[in-house]
Length: 262
Ligand code: FAD
Image 1: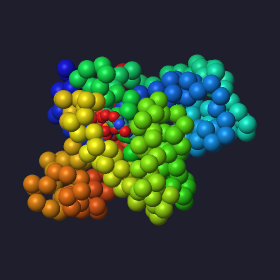
Image 2: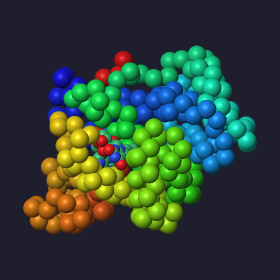
Image 3: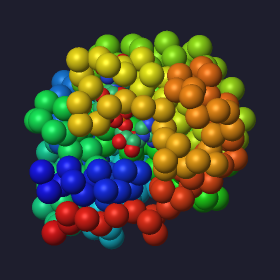
Image 4: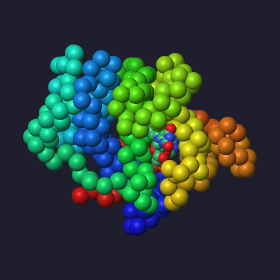
């Protein structure tokens, strides 16, 4: 209740706790669950770890962990098992402990156990990485984060229905033609809004956190051009420069909330 109140007070805050929970769940649950990681999946894991290494929201120990894990996985060019990955993860976590400063979701906490949580934090992590990539010169490839996300969702995301929807949307929205890092931020924002629209009123929606177009007018009035009566994502006329500014702001590491950390 205390956490939900905090999130209602600060509706568009991004929380460090959620970024960490996303990484922890990916590394501990989603990747080890795959028995044999080879071919396209192995490449997807290598790409995911490479972008996570570049745009890593964890502290110094977490940076070391991801860098070492990434080098470990790159050594394999045929196949790695989920078990091998898990064993190396445990060894490295022991060596570099403590890695995480939170054990709970904050911005992604649901009003009940089965709502929100990991899938919310995974969106948050990928939005965060698209924003970091645009503010950073480590790579000139505008697609690096979207490509890593596409591969991750296809190869590892436990919600297989979601993965199929996402791949279909990615082709329809021409993910591979995104021309710049700023457009990559906006591509993911628009794709996420399409999913929000589709899932509004769905049984998976947390009644405490109804799906809306993001950001809401009350969070970012200047992001909207059209009249205040439009709510469908197809009718809204967005001011994309203002949306980009808004996303750059909320995902700026300086403004990420450390609420709930130990
Ligand atoms: P989420 O939609 O998870 O959003 C997380 C946070 O991101 C929000 O709290 C908000 O702060 C912020 N946010 C919201 N919209 C935007 C935006 N447009 N741009 C930037 N930030 C934003 N569930 C299904 O039932 N069917 C599916 O097909 C499906 N596909 C999915 C595909 C992917 C790739 C992912 C990661 C998840 C998918 N899910 C799907 C899960 C679903 O999208 C939500 O994650 C889940 O319902 C929890 O919703 P939420 O209210 O916590 O907010």
